[in-house]
Length: 86
Image 1 (cartoon, rainbow, N blue to C red):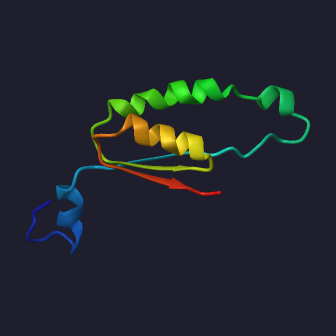
Image 2 (image 1 turned 90 degrees about the vertical axis):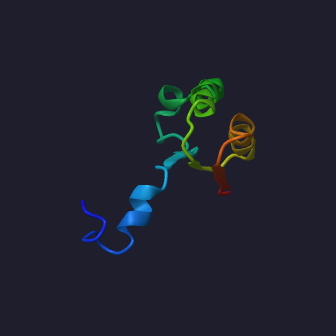
């Protein structure tokens, strides 16, 4: 796309680094499936380790303060927004 014919605002979108948006929320279990859907929190903390190596800016949503703090620790030197919704 030519910058001279691009829609207004398009250039600012393509010239900025892509952002990764992710979320981790505890929605609970469906009634009757509690045992099947129970997840080990350690698995999620292990999953989050990948965010240390992502160089692009990250926007992360969660409902857990400790998970939000962990994301901030993992991405200390990197552009990150953590939004904790209670």
